Image 1 (spheres, rainbow, N blue to C red):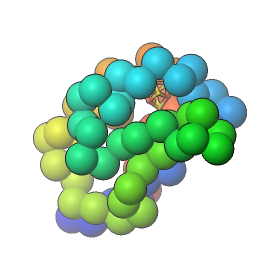
Image 2 (cartoon, rainbow, N blue to C red):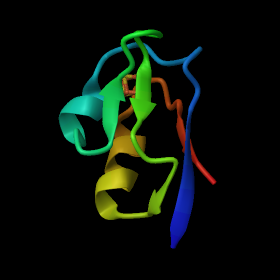
Image 3 (cartoon, rainbow, N blue to C red):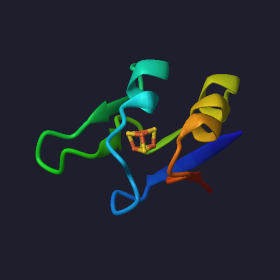
Image 4 (tube, rainbow, N blue to C red):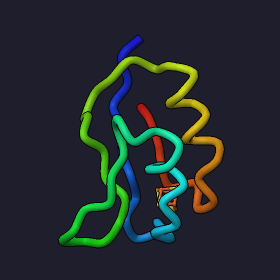
Length: 63
Ligand code: SF4
């Protein structure tokens, strides 16, 4: 199942946990200094679910 990834950058705490956990997809955008996703749409994998659950701000959302 493909999902769309949204990151609410106003809630992002710049902790980089998502980047450490899943660097293939998540990175810190140099312009906003907040987390961003390289993928707009991707398969809902266990790795993605794990990143969503560890985000302390709960600001990574999928639809
Ligand atoms: S884990 Fe959440 S709060 Fe931390 S950088 Fe990633 S999106 Fe932002």
